[in-house]
Image (cartoon, rainbow, N blue to C red; front, side, top):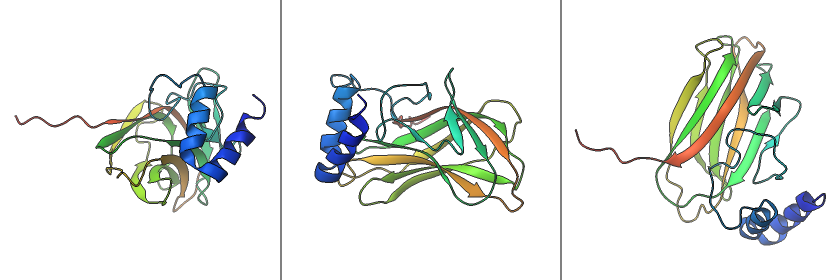
Length: 186
């Protein structure tokens, strides 16, 4: 188990995401079942290793013991806070994030960005501005249909500088990518 991360990096470098993801699924006991996207969408402490589980930059965030991703952002620069690679087939999706916290107006914000892994092409960006201090807020956005050439995707949480930078504290309770339900005529 202590060598899984290095082994996955080597597989990724030499053979690409397909081989690395298959090995990761075997390591994680997920070989025979599909699960939520992204994996560990509620940020529960887990032994599964990145890149198909969360990489979290400990200078800006941590996964909490009871679940959730707690982020402290200073409102300056554009740091990568969290990242995960995943794969969904071509189709229409929506991204749903639940968060609570304190984010001063114009102090900076956070962005969930979904892209194709290769070639790096933006599929969706959802900017998070907390409007209700301490209350759970839901953020939804549409994900551009990943094509067949976009077999693997990456979801990243980035800081976004504010006009008047201030420290924000945000707890993400979940982030899900789910198929978009077709809209029925009324």
